[in-house]
Image (tube, rainbow, N blue to C red; front, side, top):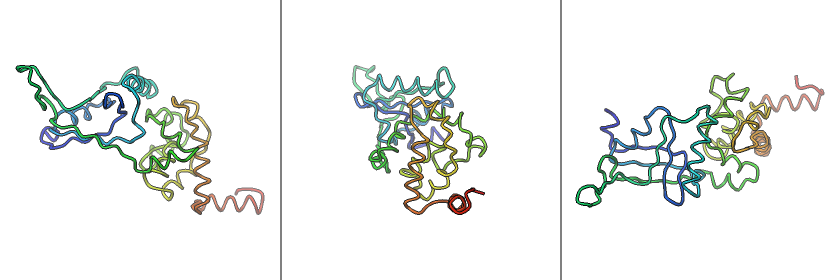
Length: 228
């Protein structure tokens, strides 16, 4: 009922293609598909890193996301290239035939361009949110999925630093990561997350944002030769 009565449906996107303007949405639950079809207006908020060159690239991404998320195929894959329309009646194109009359795309920066300037952290922009690194992370399950600010896990640390939260929120996350490297082994985009986390730690140190426990351990190592 809420979907049908809504004036606007707001979604993100897994990708948007430059050649056709097609939005890709991948899910298992079906709520996203309902949000894009029931309300008269669909607004898609899409990070600029989600722009892919071609429709074929979008198809590849869908398959990779599914396989590395642990599925043979996702339950729902939506490809949206514009508002609902039909030309069946007297060959006159009518918009909003059985879905939204309007489709609006908002491309988000929110610090992504700044991250792209960072020679080390910019590789985090390749993340496709498949979650493969979460399956392998030794910290994430121990914290029962609460290791993160808005972006979870080790890969979420550069995203927290540059996009959502800032250095203050990223600091405790960066020094919780063990940098074991399992995430790097299983990442389909070959993101070197431990290297990125180490780099973020250096940036935090320069800003004087070392967590107290890390600072105290470092001081003990220098003074006594042991961290405890």
